[in-house]
Structures are given as structure tokens and as C-alpha cells.
Length: 507
Image (cartoon, rainbow, N blue to C red; front, side, top):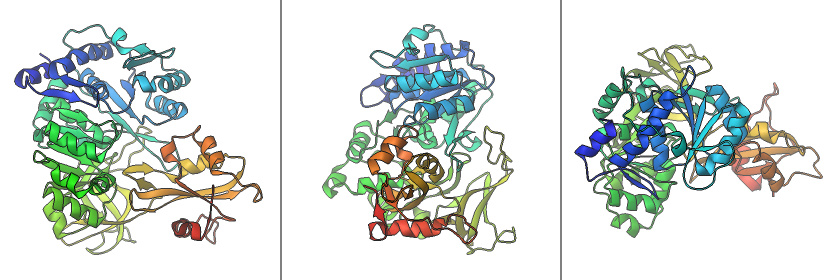
């Protein structure tokens, strides 16, 4: 008996997964999974068994990821907002042999597959499909019980790189229970303390490692509800309707919830909620305080990265005693501040935050890069005598906007290609709602004929996903530079943060 059928027998009245349009029982989920798993097991997926998934949030997107796990294949989580050329790079870099997608992304998936010579693109959903895309129901016809003696393969996620190219990284060991075969993998998930909370709500894009954890909840036997996109009022209604037990959110979600009318928040039935995990960007102290005051001591915070998973955790009680802290390192990690001499700095010292991984895994990219057992996530911090960590700044230029990582280099490489742009630099500036937002300082090729905002947007959106582009663009005569000619990002941040009082906005 398959795991989904077994869960359905234990919980005949519970749904397995639902979204805005579909609600599937465990038996219906099993009926969809079986033929897809058998198809994947029979396919030639190459040495890494990679299958790219290009889809928005939905019940069937979750099932596609789960099908890969049950088939012993490695699901490649692809940002569903990327252009065909960006997706093609990921297909080639990951050595994916197949693409699974929803109908809305079928055309861009087909174009990417054609460019990267991936022969099979299968889609779910109603409606006509473009040339080169086959309906997944036509491709998957064998509904026998799949084999389970195969070893599970870790999913692959892509993180944006400072060079402008995303980097592939397998889900780290801290986010992966492993197992000798599929049966053992499912058994371990069923024993996971976090999954034991029960019904889980997904509010972020499933191509991110946090929301992707929903597949672990499902495979561990917990029902999952998926929102297509975040809506604060809908989130509250969904928690009450589905008796949600756990949810992961970023600080921007917190801010939008707190912005709801007080009566709306007071009347919401959140009595089922047991576990709220804050992930992504650093949360403003006043926002975190307000969420704990509203929800009670069920708000936890996880600090880490896709490459390594969670490195630090902190509970509501600990956080209230140490506002702003991201917690203490959890096994197998040890946190320390590296001094200028390369040694461990004493408590209270501000400096580069480093971690030691006792498992020896460290950071490993598909490119072959290995950090060694000691690594940094590029941030500045400090620690107290008890080992609690505070993040004070970032060494890198990465911008975290609404919990999404954006690298200025990607936008710069696109904008500099515009014929009316002579020079450009992008920086992150504070934003009350999003945490940070990306701003561009542009030097025109001809000061008398500067580019318009429409010129830049039309040109850029053909080359890169819209969320990676600056939300604010200003014209400057020259870019600030250091005496040795390097761009002075600190001066640019200060300049951009002053906005229109100091700069000419591009209209």
C-alpha cells in the first residue's frame, strides 16, 4: 500500500491537499501520484535524475514535487517568474532531463526546454497546450503501486549569485531526513517533531526552500493548504476554515497582517494555530513584538540560508528577553564572530559571523564549490555570553526585499546593456513595508537625451524577471567611487536613501 493510501485509511475524513480551486482526498492524491511516479521511474533522467518543476503555487505543484521524491528523482525548484532564457540556464546547469509545469507556464517552459535541448515537457491543467508540451495525463498511464526500494534524492534549489548567475544547491542535510529507501524516508518524516503539529499552510512561492518544506509535511502525513499568493485577510480566513496548525512567514507577511483593521484581526479564529515560523529577512523589533502579543508565544524564528538550512533558532520567550536576536546555533552548527586576526572574537564584539558545521557538510554547490566545515553567510553580527546572535549588517550587497533575495549584479548586467545607459549601479535602501527595496543610479549616455522609465522597463523585462529589477531609478552625473576607483556602495546607499531631494528620478 502506498503512503497516501495508508494515510487516507487512517484519516478518511481529512483532505490531503487543497488550493484555491481544488481539494483532494488522500485517495485522490494517491490516484494522481501513482502514474506520475511510475512514469518518472521508467524515464531516462540521466545520472543526477533531475526533473525541473516550473509552476505556480497549487495542489498539483506540491504533488509534482512529492512524485519526484517518491520516484527517487531530484526535483529542481525553478522560480516561476523567470524568463525562458533564465529557465534554460537552470535546465542546462542542473542537467535536467524533463520539465513538469502547469498550463500557465507551459509556453515559457517549452521555449526554455527547446533552447536547452530537454525533450520532455509535461503539463497539468485544463486548456490547449503549446507545441512540444504533452498533457501529463497522456504521459502517465501506469497506475500500479510504484517501487519503494529506491533511495530518495535531494531536491535542488537555486540561489541568486553575486555574479548574476543563480547557483544550484541540493537541499542541505539539515532540511533532509534522508533514508536508505522511500519507505524509510516517509517513516522518518512521520516522526519529525515539526511535522507532528499537523495541518500546514503555504503562503510563499514553493520554489523557495521554506515553502518547499510543505512537501515534507505532506509526505509525513500532514494535510497541506496552499495559497496561490499571499493575502492577509485570506490567510486569517484559511487558518480558521482549515484548522491550520503551522505556517511559515516572512516579516513582510507579518506587516501586512498587522495592517489589517483591528476588528478583522480580533474576530479571526486562530485557536488551532500552534507554530508560526518566521524565516527570510530580519524582522523589525516592533513588528515581532506585535505578532507575539497577538498570537502568543508560538512565534519562532529561523536564521540560515538555502545552502545550509537553519543555523540558529529562537523561541518567543527567548526573543522577548533578547529583542532582535536570531537565537543560538543549533546542531550541528556552532556560531562565532571572526576577529581581524582570524581568531574567535570575545562576546560583544561586532564582526563577520561564521559557523562551524560539525557534520563537515558546509556549503556545497553543484558547480563543485565546497566551503569546508567553516563558512559565513556574508553577514556582520555580534554574540552575547550565552551564545545568542544578533545580525547587525551584511558584508555582501544582497538585497532582501519581502523575504526574497535580490542581487544588484543581475540588474546591473541588464541595465548596462541599454543603449542610453552609460553606467549604472544598484543598491538596497530601507523600505518600511518590504524591509529593503532595490534602487538604481543611472548615468545617461547623453545627458540631453536620458532614458525614460518606460524605456528601461520594456528593455529590461525581456531579459530578466521583473522582481529582480529596481523599484526606484535615479539619474546621476557620476557614480560615487573610492580613491582606487571601486564603486562606493555605502555612499550610493546614502545618496539613494535621500531620494528625490538629492537625485533626479527617471520618469
